[in-house]
Image (tube, rainbow, N blue to C red):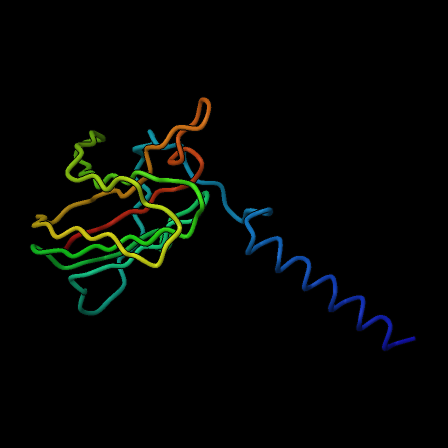
Length: 149
């Protein structure tokens, strides 16, 4: 009887793990894209890299935050979704966004798309602008923050 209980427990843990990693259950809600409230997360200690690789899935960009050292930045984006995506790199100053670069037609492939750009210290966003109905992919969670130090 105890073995049966362990099997049920393992099955339940496996199901919860699948739901968390599949995105069915979300641990945290993201703030709306227009939220400019100060939600500063401390930067990790140590030296920063000059490059970052992002993976684009349906509903998310991974990692969600990257700290980099400028001024020359290398960014790569690889799509892991059957849908086509258009990703924008934008600077953020005083709650105003300014588009700096755009990568179009990112689709499920092993081909990475690259951006090489000189960025001063500041906050930047990488997000998808494709619209589905009333919402953009950004509204659905396809957004990442880049902090240049």
